[in-house]
Length: 170
Image (cartoon, rainbow, N blue to C red):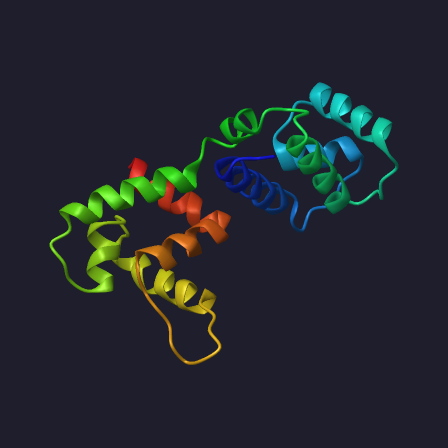
């Protein structure tokens, strides 16, 4: 049984791995593992041997990612180590930094919050808002624009999460 943090980290690993292989073609199966999980060639061969030793899988990048995620769930490798390879738990770090910065935020509009709390440059604000609003879904024409929904947007979009993490690091 995995803890809630491990479950969230596994979702992040899977999302990051799928992002890493999206739209790419691979010559060998180990290339998929190397690209998706940022592994060395030797580690990719070791993982592939373990995957093939367990069962026969389809020869598709998605099947390979699914199988390695399953191996992580079952303790084959450390979820924390994989998170570290990807540069740490960016989602949690962005969320905690934003929460701290919101405590100092004097109030204002959503644009003010993006500028002052999230360090978004003036020329990036409108495109970011467009992408964020484009990601919102609702059964009725009613949307909540708040810190929580913006954090969910960041967590669902690897590129946006990376950009926000970089903004906080600068």
